[in-house]
Image (tube, rainbow, N blue to C red; front, side):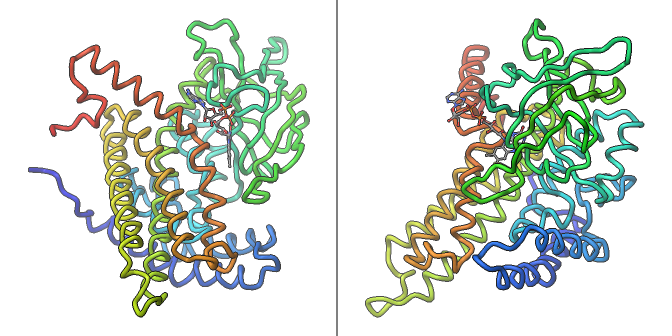
Length: 414
Ligand SMILES: Cc1cc2nc3c(=O)[nH]c(=O)nc-3n(C[C@H](O)[C@H](O)[C@H](O)COP(=O)(O)OP(=O)(O)OC[C@H]3O[C@@H](n4cnc5c(N)ncnc54)[C@H](O)[C@@H]3O)c2cc1C
């Protein structure tokens, strides 16, 4: 039997180093930041200051850029090993930013690594992995359903004489757009392509650029998170900045999104674990009717449900990561994980708030903030129903093609 759930020693060392770094450096700095913040939310410049200071320490602690190859200045961890490291980092608010492994930069780094030309890698990937710039990924539009990227209306027209593309359109919810050094932008180049998925192309856009206007940082239920609305007017992009080839925008988005969705799940696992720890700690310490709240069966059910859901989340993420790392088909498993982990995050944070009573509804614990952020997990990178539709489609196809459900239920010998 070759199923082995132990970590190779070199990965375990990184995981423990990240945990210690988060516990002794990042969390205390964050607690100080929040304690000094008026109104509960720290100023943006103070958050940026903390991240910059902590990034220097991350390099000293040798936890910087864990997911990138050594020749790009990283630790060379594969996606399965990253599950452990990302979950550790996400037990703090800004841990993944401190490691330079945050969305959307992590996904853009991998996209440039696998699909960029050597010149694009030097110009865009190099400064990104060195932490000298940030980036964003611009696909979603207000006028059309983000769940169907074939409907994208942002148009890129080729100007043959100038060797460049002229792009017009409208994007929104572009995370990290304000202050980004470049964007990967998805636009329509071939409206009549067959299949329609071949109608979009990815471009690398230098920022700031004439024709790229940040209209606003959209206020969300979690405040201003630098999720911006962008107006694109006669934006000029040279031929050399087409990324991954004309008509490959959809494919590139899919290739990017599989691992990027899983990276989100890994970070959410850290958040779920943190919420469950808060639930247990409060239930053990709160006394009523002469006993701890944790003695009540109704509370134990919440604990048990949360533990089972968290355990399932971990196994799903590890199996999907394993499939990606071994070059096996992974879309079904990533959809399982994306849907399950996002919903587990929501439920466990909600239960932790319930167990805290009025305190849970206050801003005195991190739970209300976690809940406001958790809600977006069920929307970003494919809404719940998109993943359910895909899962059901694969299930029906497996049944129709083979008379078995095996390939759509993990492809396991069970
Ligand atoms: C915090 C945050 C950050 C984001 N960051 C980025 C970013 O950096 N770059 C970027 O390009 N986009 C980003 N997005 C946008 C995100 O990717 C889209 O919101 C998502 O793809 C859904 O698209 P939509 O909002 O247009 O919803 P729609 O596509 O209009 O869908 C609305 C609802 O319809 C339902 N639905 C959709 N498809 C189906 C189906 N097949 N069957 C049944 N029901 C269905 C779902 O309930 C869905 O929530 C971000 C969004 C948020 C909230």
